[in-house]
Amino acid sequence: MRPVDEAGRWAGPRFCPRPGCRMFAPHGSGATVQGMSSSSHPHSHPHPHPHSHRGSGLSDEARAVHAAAIPIDLHADTTKLMSRGYDFYQRHDPPWPVRSFFGHVDLPRMREGNHRAQFFGMWTFPKPERGCTEDVHRQIDALEATIARGDSAMVLCRSADDVRTAKERGQVAALLGIEGGQALGRGTSEQVIERLTTFARRGVRYLGLLHFSQNALGYPQQGWGRDHEKGLTPIGCEVVDACRRSGVLVDLAHINHRGFFEVVERRPGPLFVTHTGVLGVQRHWRNIDDDQIHAVAESGGVVGVIFAPRYLGQDGIEGVVAHLSYLVRVAGEDHVGIGSDWDGAVRPPKGLESPAKLPHLTEALLRAGFSATTVHKILGENVLRVLSSAPPMQFV
Image (tube, rainbow, N blue to C red):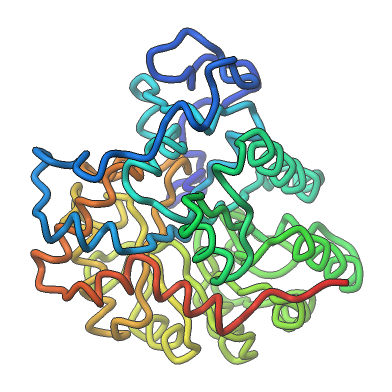
């Protein structure tokens, strides 16, 4: 999600989808997005024919490699849209300029691209901060309601085994993450940690400590309240420690440099940077440096490459491949993943406008010289390994 620019000003579109708006009417229909129409059944969009990508420029090798993969995207913001009535079971084709920012992820296009699992990064507006906790619960409620309407087309997953089982059953796996510690609110450390535990009980698997504003946990790399001289707050330190006890992975996207390494020193387990670029390819404040990459790798974690031209430095799949390739060289092939930021007010690069286009990333990685095994790791196996090594807390 990119709501502010380098100066801290709002830089996204001048609107936010509202219940009942027509921006996301399903492709080919005149329906609004509030609720599901009688034709909005998940099985109205069956699994794609195994040769559905013929004539699309994909090689037989790429089709076979991609079909055998379990692609897992570490970050998309679609639950915010769901909480405003977005029909996940319909294929969307929003008008320009909306399509540059939202309407990227839905079940038909996930199936078309063999996109097996999606982490939904639940973001909240930090101004005012009050109400952020309730907003995340609304997003979880919306996802659960969407799953309940879907006749087992999608399932909420918490573990690697859950994701693999979902694939075997032909289901899409939904996983939960939080973007921004403002979701935990203010108060005593006990109150903040209790909110974290409540989210963990509901299935949240990662917590992004910062977004684009200072909060009770620390300071952002860019945005409101940034302060590069400060790191984690005392409550932030306690929350990081509590994450490990609660089975919640820590996401270091958006946090400032000092805070980043203060988290590393606390050793909360495998670390995620769910959606980012790398400074070794593109000089941009949003991207991370080699020391940060090494720290994530040494923790056993994964860095997910964002699908955003401004951070990649190129507008195309080749930009994503360049950042993935750099990460493989610096961190090793076991610590690299994808974190699109679809539906996050970020324009995707040409050729990766939706999950339907993921097979083309597989093609590009193979053409860049990566083996099928490495491609599978990048697409999802590395994330599955992290989920296996840091299982969710079992709550009674």
